[in-house]
Length: 321
Image 1: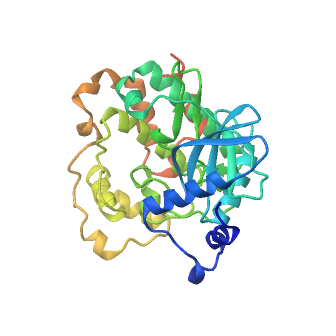
Image 2: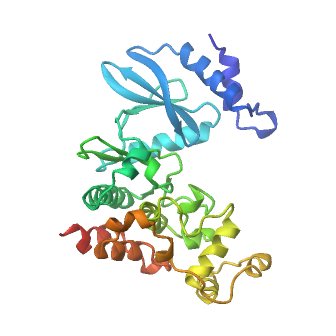
């Protein structure tokens, strides 16, 4: 059985004293030992089923109900924060539901949802299925945004879809924040970050989530080959300049009172050299529906102040036909 002293080492907030396990294998073994040592009435924990932000996720059973057990050993603040987020959005449509977190251990129990593997989901995608997914996620975001919460890591791999598409659930709220928090631009999956996040703005509020939904559509249309694929924020911004133009990005940064580093600006092309449409995959022509493309372009509106809210996006004609 794992010792309480060893668990406590993970929970200290003093960085100088914090013991870190850099090897993923060693870390997983440590987490497995911890899980095996847990003795909670009514709870059985089985296999690891994935990784979420800041933790590992296991399949479990709690008082005869299937649950997802998130184990977060090395970040007490993240544990408390995610608990508070999940409690706040409990009851919001299509958001993963917290079951229990009132334990003297660093775990959170959430409802377990079986889901189509992402690769199968992408390969079997058609317009009707896209409509179901987008509508469900926008409904979720509309409610959580109205609760004062932003997800900050909206992407296809964080969406759980049942075999018959009757249930679509947004999960992994580890990056989520309250709108009253100081938001950071350096969060979530980089390829889904909005232009204002890439240039370092912090006042993007819920509009970063809206951009990310647009990227989900683009991701499906391009087979994952986004036109701004790059290895870091700066290079991704350079690729965006090729699509939106240098002057637009510089003017946007000025309006947001953000300074772009001179060494990054030196890499900007002076003229637009490519379009989003050029990145569309040949084998996805059946998805290039006029209304879907119009919705995507509105969600990917460059200026966040002109981007629709989730509620407004749900009124788009794509969902009405």
